[in-house]
Amino acid sequence: MNTFTAEVSRIQDLTHDVRAIELRLLEPASITFKAGQFVSFEVPKEGHPRPVTRPYSIASPPEQRERILLVLNLVQGGPGSNYLFSLREGNRTSFKGPAGAFYLRDDGTKDLCFVATGTGIAPVRSMILAQLQRQPDRPVTLFWGLRSQRDLYWQDEWAALAAIHPHLTVVTTLSRPEPGWQGASGRVTALVEERITSVRNLAVYLCGGNGMIKDVTARINAKGLCPIYREKYYDE
Ligand SMILES: Cc1cc2nc3c(=O)[nH]c(=O)nc-3n(C[C@H](O)[C@H](O)[C@H](O)COP(=O)(O)OP(=O)(O)OC[C@H]3O[C@@H](n4cnc5c(N)ncnc54)[C@H](O)[C@@H]3O)c2cc1C
Image (cartoon, rainbow, N blue to C red; front, side, top):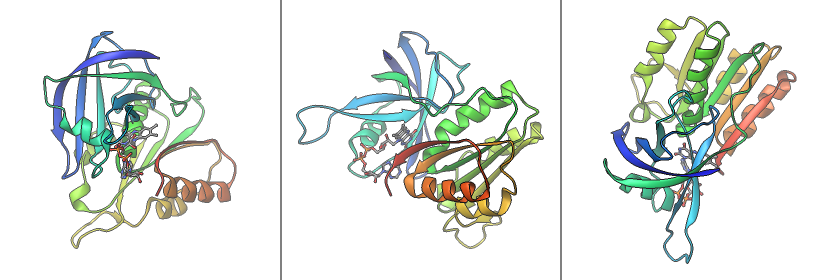
């Protein structure tokens, strides 16, 4: 693992509490990572003598080595997210990485199913972009769970990707939609239950809170055996 210094090159507010932060690497000037891996920040925590470590997945694809994209939500009073939300364009920061065993496997024979809740989309975005480069002809399905309309982001980006990649299917489901929502509603777990008819030749990647991970793992296992890779962000 290396320590990197970087400059905040772009900040984009995606929703009322989700922000994308692009970091341009200064020293070293580029990073080599596997799609799905994370970097870690050491941040001060009130009342603690020593900094605490918070990991954030890289949302950009691995071929983009000079800049990485993070996407995160603000957790009230949380030292990691509040530190990253305090950064402004042009500020410098440092992090360690890359690390993590949740990365896109080099198994060209499997169809892929990704299930994410909230900002669990971050490593999944990196993995899907890498997969579409590597093997555009293999089926890839993404089930992404968000809460309501005000939590939606990147919908146009996924629609544009699906338009040029006929083997990519993206379904965003809202667990608490406001009236007027035309898309899928309910939990990702229900989508997995309904839409995955067979796990033969499937590899599954799950990222988000541990409740979703446990439920989806159980549903997949009930359908049969296949590899399931998981990244737990937090306990629900
Ligand atoms: C490998 C890994 C990669 C991660 N990548 C990302 C990422 O790309 N984007 C991202 O937003 N987070 C990511 N996380 C979560 C992140 O590391 C922090 O836990 C999160 O930002 C909260 O940290 P905090 O210090 O602000 O708040 P804390 O004080 O540590 O958290 C307070 C509580 O908030 C809840 N919480 C934590 N994370 C979230 C969340 N994302 N959504 C809702 N509630 C939460 C938990 O119940 C937690 O106990 C990742 C976690 C892991 C383990």
